[in-house]
Image (tube, rainbow, N blue to C red; front, side, top):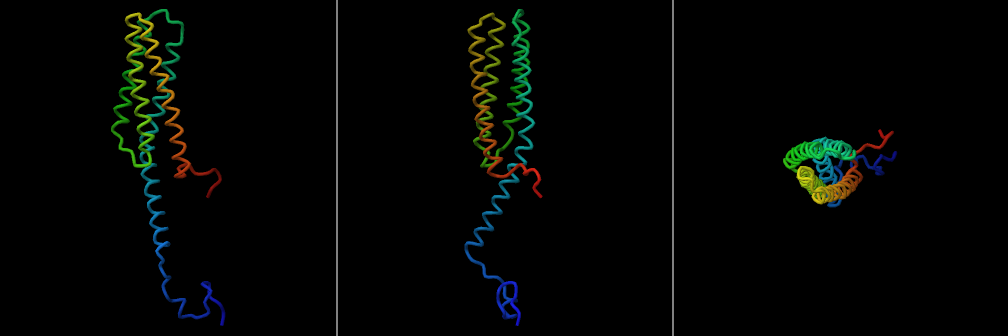
Length: 173
C-alpha cells in the first residue's frame, strides 16, 4: 500500500477532517485580525497621505517666500496669512479622519504638528504686520516645533509601514 500525502497508509484516515487545535484556530484568528488592521490602515493612509504631502509642499513654498530678505513686511504678512489659512484648512480636513487603532499615535503627532504650524504662521503673520520681529521669531519657533513633530510622525509612519507591510517589496510576487 502506498503512503498518502498526510503520511498515513490508511485510506480511511485520509477522509477524516483535520483536527482543529486551539493554536491553529488562534493562528488563523490572529492572521485575520492582522489583515483587517492592515486594510484599515491602507484606507486611512489613502486619505491622510494627500494632506501630508500638501502640507509639506505648502511649508516649503512658504519658507521659500519669506526667506528672501524681507524688504516689505506687508508682503511677508500676506504670504504668512495665506499659509495659515491653507494649513488651517488641512487641519480641518485631517481632523475629520478617524484613525484605526494602530495609527492613533501617528494621527495625534501629525495633528499636533499641524496645530503648531497654524499657530506659528499666525503669530509670524501678526509679527510681520506690526513690525515686531520678536513675534516673528516666536512664530518661527512654533514652526520649528512643527518640523520636530513631523519628523516624529514620519518615524511612526515608517514603523507602521514596516510592521504591517503596507508597501510591497520590489520584485515580490
